[in-house]
Picture 1 (spheres, rainbow, N blue to C red):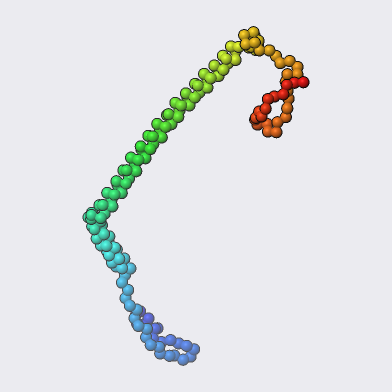
Picture 2: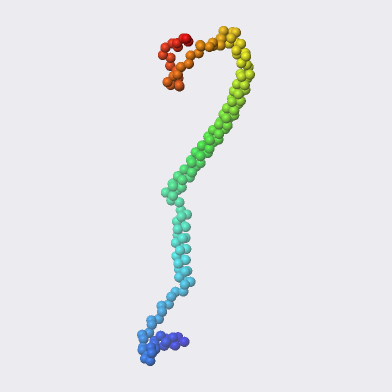
Length: 163
């Protein structure tokens, strides 16, 4: 069968004439794919083994960088924990102060209510008229005037007497 393939490759019929064609060179024998993979794998396995073996050794530079990273991590954790504890203390202080403010507001309201109920308007009138000698103003004693600026009053001279 190999001979028939060889003969077929040597002659080619084109129409009614037969020409002799040069024989094709024999195809190169390829390595089986399995062997190629095996070589590649063995190379990569060897390279990986060498890299793994080298990585087992700690050189000083790697150790220094690793130590620096660990120290930075530890310091940052300590700082974070201290800040967190300060925040918690501040929150507790704020809650305590809010409770104090609420108690003070309640006390102020109670005192204000007590003061309002302590004196009635009749009592105030009696004290003002009887003890302090105050009297209601008579008609004509009140003088009205218009000021330019309504925010405050500045007295330049004595207020005129009513006519």
